[in-house]
Image (tube, rainbow over all chains, first blue to last red; front, side, top):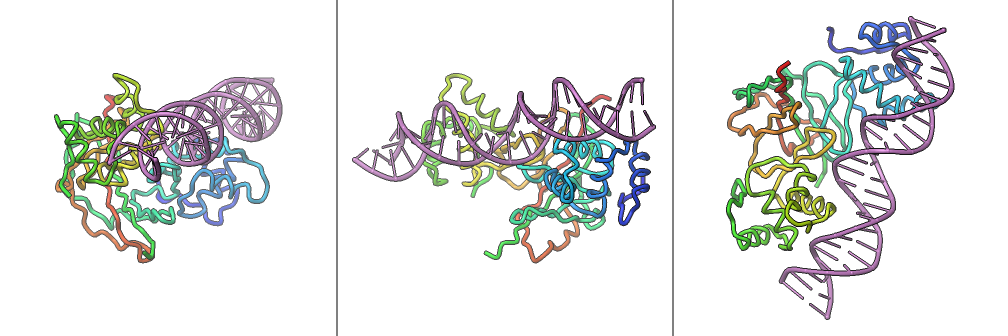
Length: 144
Length: 144
DNA sequence: TTGGGTGCAAACTATTTGCATTCGA
DNA sequence: TCGAATGCAAATAGTTTGCACCCAA
């Protein structure tokens, strides 16, 4: 798979192909959501996606946004970022990377994984297998 | 501050003192919650705390559990761990450390921070200041 | 045509809040 | 006593689900 999956200035046909390549039936709503979500590296909540997609015309329901983002995640088009107990962020950067999380503004910023090395990772308990290592650096932007 | 804050086999008077030292008025419910939460290093959801505290007699309400865990967090007695979008975990280990998160069982395991070193931490964006660096290692225990 | 996809609303769940009552100092 | 703490229920918000309808293949 090629990282990152981005769709800048893509034609509708490109989007259709991308979805199809990932085993996703390209429907009207999914295309709209893909165009919004995958047009650049960004971190959006489901609600933000809903509002952006429906900014022009209300053509996508809230349930479909949730279902579609879940599907995109499952198919590897986007990733979930869990840093805030109140909502999930969806990340269009599927490359292995980490995050700064500004707790004051609620915004995320990528940290390329080459910029960060972890030493001495201990063995997981109970013969468990490591799926993913995630580093979250919480920062504050308050003047204070 | 001394780490970790633990209360193994503590008398009620010890708990009262601990809460008082942290600027918390020691009420009946807070004492029960502190005894349950701080008796050992553990990761509990609010609901788990509620059930344990009320296992014998129903003397603490759900709202009070949430309010009290929030208060304990604010006062530095416990920490919040955000790894699951569906609920928050409260961690009685207030020392700087990281976590394994078993996505299959939903359980957390501590990683002492001496066991893990991060190299080349980049500068945070927009002159933000680092508050906390958190490493979450998601693991799977499934036989598969 | 026809099974998967969508919209809608209702259901759900974790968490928060308002307010009258109770309790600790 | 008296303000702080609690309980309860209702409110809130994010997310999921059930089902009738619709559309892509």
